[in-house]
Image 1 (cartoon, helix red, strand yellow):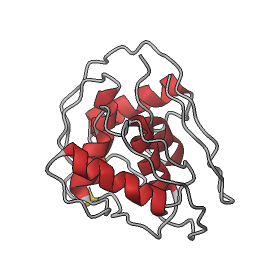
Image 2: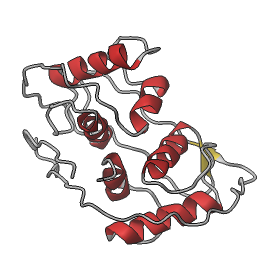
Image 3: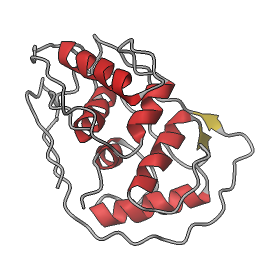
Length: 202
């Protein structure tokens, strides 16, 4: 069971979410079909001084790597220190505290123990809560879709990581939404991102 630490809410709905143990079956995937004119979608580059659902997802992923940090969607000093610690311990990442495409890619993988030696004091911040994860649906492609696919694979779904949101990815998204009790529309919005930020419970 994964436990998320909620230090403050900052006026946004940042209640902690707990992943229940579940038995996951692997649906038969079908080949992706790429749209004629796919819409490119990247994950937002994050750094200290920002806040929003994207920062919340970042903190959710850091907590899965054993970082005991605030879960409030605020990219303050503590989150900055955790990102730099992760970048230093993961290997091959620039230690600058900026969450760009390479750091996102590492964080979207299922976790290993990196935060066991980390400590940084929490300092409350009130940055505007306006940096969010992109809403994804069929016909899109890019880093954000690749992250989505990596998170779905972490839940043991069989899926190709190609950054293309085609028929196979939509089918798996719908299957996951059904499993966790979300509307089965195949669209990856705030609630689906929140569920995918969790690690699969053993």
